Length: 395
Image (tube, rainbow, N blue to C red; front, side, top):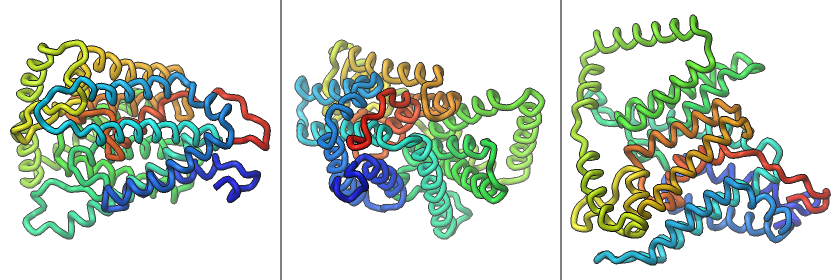
């Protein structure tokens, strides 16, 4: 692989493959086909980078963020050792998921070490890919509507699930709002970015998924309050409230949409209460990541990344997940990231808020979880501090 690039360095190829892989996940309909791209392209390129210059690769992988993330993944993978449930253990599934998640994170870190500005380029690729996915999903939904579009919007490819898709596309809206506000954009670029951002916001709203809508609302509110002057904030809030009043005051469909979303039955509290009662019996290390809260029921996982961490890994697992988020927020606020500090912090807030009412095991993958949890945390992680090696040994 190394001989395909000038100077024989496979690092730039890895960076391009990682971006292509993540973009492809938003267009390839089959999760299995998308996963094959990771197995056949990203993993070999990651290993090639490591073999090409082991010292530099190890230096990049010794960064605190990657070590914390790998520790979290390793702990939950190891938790299969104390599984005592009655259902199938599925050891191979969870060992594979843990290993692939760590390899994915390693590919991101090594790609950033190989390509200057990788984090910013990746964020831009993600925005355009997510915006295109949202536009395709909206178009397909519009064509399929036969009864006033009363159905919840399903996504396309890795956004196919309404809740998880809303979480992914919500990240796209945040990235779009940031890119749109940057100076130096042409009018055409601003129009295209505005259209893409609006498509992302429309996607999230039309899924009628309360968790993603709340997470996006909180994230955009933080961006607006922190970036705009007080007068502009009041004007923006007034325009938004007036638009909502007109929409819900004059549109029966909009009122019905809002009423259905607010009154739809949710079993989250019951699931969490039931799960936390189980945690009391094994409070320190939990039941193992392959345990199911109720194997005889349709609900098999706790529907919250925090409750899931406590159930699968006990107090130790929950503490590790909280350290993961707090570490990412610390780096974002300290301004150590390629992205602006505010944007990085908002991405962490968005992922942490989504995790309240959704998500399960942190080592599921290749899956939507890589977009929802691990990519925002990576984008909020510090730039590489490793000095560039000699030209003949670049990774």
